[in-house]
Structure formats: structure tokens, C-alpha cells
Length: 436
Image (cartoon, rainbow, N blue to C red; front, side, top):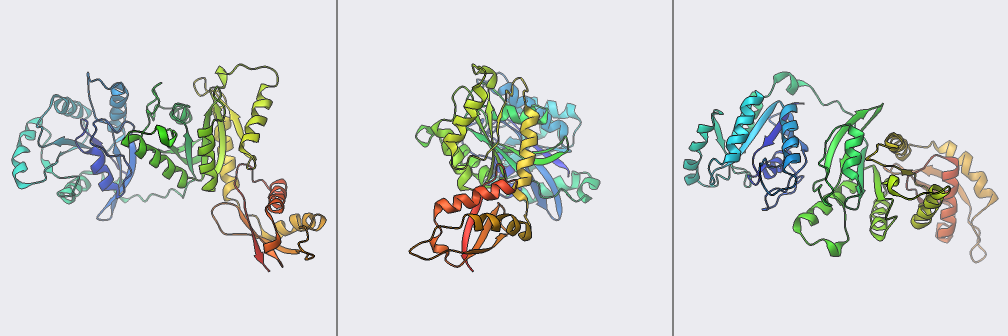
């Protein structure tokens, strides 16, 4: 599909317009300048035409923002890969030095540009817009991204300038697995995303909390194809004081809810702490597949049995759902990055597999006969039939005469037998007992 990049200086309303175009509150919006940092993609449909939209951070130079250089790099990449640039300015502030600098950069890029003047909320403000003709970028379009006025005409103009052939192609991409990379701040989530993609897709700095939005990226390399979602770090509720961080954490939780496989990253030097367990429990409650990646393994002091002891301690901490792959990496040194990729692909396959009913009964009924459920008040429970339910995650129904008498320990026995006969590594399993 064609790609439209929204660029401009900080706080002119780029994310507000982005959310309006994609039809959902996907990018964080706040009065604070410089909220958006990474490139943020979404899909827009207008009058039967579909195109992708990318929201970028605000362009600045010589400011106090430590992310300034990285944000400029992200904006430049977005402009280079786009088919059309939507340049946003603000009516009330007039032409600033940053606006003139961006206009100069866009003229050199030779890309089609649509100049859009935002925050024109009333008739009188129209008179503030005419000064922007001096930027030399042609016709301008007055809108209010907050209340939507003028956006219809703007979209008509965008559609008229997009390449025709790109508009006619259908997006034939199948429903891909969504891989969410989650964890505490500063454990290396964005570094892992960049290492997998082989490019600086997300901004990486030593400052905790660099990533704010949950940033989705299409991945298609080494025979694997899925959507990778880099999320903001999640801290304890008591430590979240700013509104911005609250929204970031909410986006991360939403990313877990919408994912198929969660890659939980922990810091090798800190181990599986209480906050890591809270995130793991959140993944478990949402019935998502999980891969645990222990990052910064190069900084950990090791001896002969360190790896095994660390893995055993980790599995004891996350029990009873301990059938989870654990991979030790150093993202900075690119150690075992491909192992993460291969394991995520394997777990995603396990998560969506459908086991034939005949195979289930063939494998499990003899096990149940050898070790039947304990009798309860002189009554014997007889399990006659097993089938997999049509849910998104692996769940199984066991039909029996007295389901109310089957207790939790026996359900765990059934789950362990399922895992021993079928490859459910990394996947949550839910068991239901039903009246025959």
C-alpha cells in the first residue's frame, strides 16, 4: 500500500491527526511537547482507497531533548520510505525556524508534499494561515485534528496525489501472529527489535522509559513472517507518577491482550523480580504463549553449572506454568538472537495447532485408565471422551459422568499428560470437565 508520512515540529497535533485517520487512539496524545519518539504505523481508508499512515516525532535542532538526534533520524527514514509527505504546521504560532528547516528538507527530498495547517478551530483563524504560502510548498489545507473539521477535504487531496497502482493492489497479507516484546524498563526490548529487524527501527538509549508507544513492525526474514510489537517498559503501579507513563503502560497491556506470543525479557543481573512475575502473571491470565529471554547474559559472572542452576531457579519461580522456553542472550553482542526468532516461530505454531480428536483419545484414554480420578464419597469418575475446543489458545474438554468431583491436582495430571504426548511447549493449556 501507499505510505503517507506525517511530519512537523513538536506539539502541532501530528498524533491527534494520526489517531483520527486510523480511527482509533493508537498513538499517545498529550499537551507535553515531544511525546512521540518512534515511527508509528496505522491504516487509513477513505472513499474505498486504503493507504498506510506513519506518525513521527517532532523535528527539533539544538533543543534540550536528549532524543533529538534519534527522532530526526526516524523522521528522515519515514520521509524516505513514504510516497507522500503530510507536513503539519500550527496556525496560531506562525512560521517557526523549525517549520522553515523542515520545509527546506522536504523540498530537497523531491517527495509530493501536502501542507496542512492545524488548530484552525474558528473562522477568524483562517486569516492566520495565509502566511504559510511563503514556505513555497503550494496549496495549503486548514484543518482541526481535534474536532475533525477540514479532514475530509485533506483526505481527498491526499488520495488524488497517491500513486494509482499502489491504491489498486489489495493487501493480501494473511492474518499473521502478533509477537509482543514485554518487560520492565531498560531490559533491552527495543534493542532486541532492532537486532531482529537489522535496522534502527526503534530509538535505543540508556535512559529507562525511552519507548512510549507500542510500536508494530512487519517482519519477513529467514522464512519467518509475523508482526513484532515493541512495548514500553512496565513498572510497579506505585512508581508510575506521570500521565504519559500511565498511558504507555496501558498500551503495553493492550499489546499483550492483542498478541499471540509474548517475549518476556528480563535482566540477567537482576533475575526474575516481583515486577517480572507480575508481567508473567498478566501474560498467563490473558492465556498467551510465552518465551522468556534472559538478556545481558554477558554481564553475568558464570561458572560450570550457572546456566542450569539459573534455569532451574527461574522455572521454580514461575511454576506451575513452567513449560516455557528460556533463552539466554546478549542483544548488544548479537548472541543467540536467531534462537529467539526460531523459538518464537515454534511456539507460535504450537499455540495455533489443532490436535485431531482421534489422536487425543488414542493417547490419553489409556493414561486415564491406568490412573483414574480419585473416588469421591464412594462414587467413581469415568472419563469417556476428549476433544479440543475451537478457541484461540489450546483448550480441551474432557467428558465424564461426574465432572464436579474432579479436583485441581487431577486436572494438573491431565495437563502434564497432554504436554508429554503433544508439543505444547510455551503454550498455556486450559482443561474443562463436562457432563457426558
